[in-house]
Length: 264
Image 1: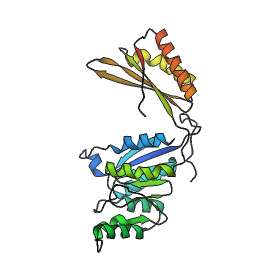
Image 2 (image 1 turned 60 degrees about the vertical axis):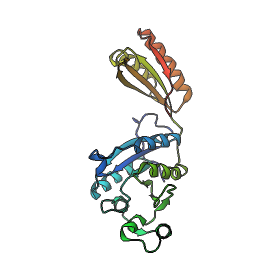
Image 3 (image 1 turned 120 degrees about the vertical axis):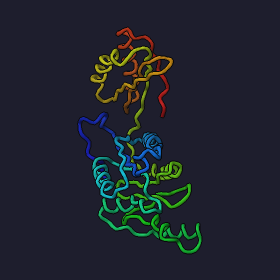
């Protein structure tokens, strides 16, 4: 599949492979269910050299799912959807994906056979809904329980249940054409607010346009400060920029600095 077009304003564009996540479900938007899939997907993609560039959450409305999916799959190299592939009437993700690609839904014989073997005898109408995939689609293995997900074009359709979704991700990774893996370093600045570090950080960011530099403030009973994160695809430049950042902050009179381990 051809890469999505990139714009000159994209950070560290060269070697960049991007993805978006489309979270589907009224239960997420209502607050009844707390989404944990996004963080798992972001970390998994990052380890495969794919940058998660956008995430959207939409309700169980077919037209809204179709519109969001078409916008995301045209802009990014990959799209991962979660939720809405169960047996109930409001599980309409498969219908929406088929509509977005302009193809029909068909019952996959392998899924029907798996269901018959698991539940025995005739598969009822509700469960048969989970056997439908768009024409031209391929299955995504589900090693946990229940029917598989599917993929079509640059879209991967996964379950919303976190444990099942994580299992399905294991079959997604080998299919991705990743780019250079992004590395990151974090500098913890204690006792200084963002106002004090804004100017040095901005100057450094302008001097290193191939990198992404971000400031993330924290507050707590032990004090306040900011975590300064440098991200990029060139490990040498990231390390060099970290040294420059420490030096420029010390020149500004900021001394409470600590390089901390950055979560993968």
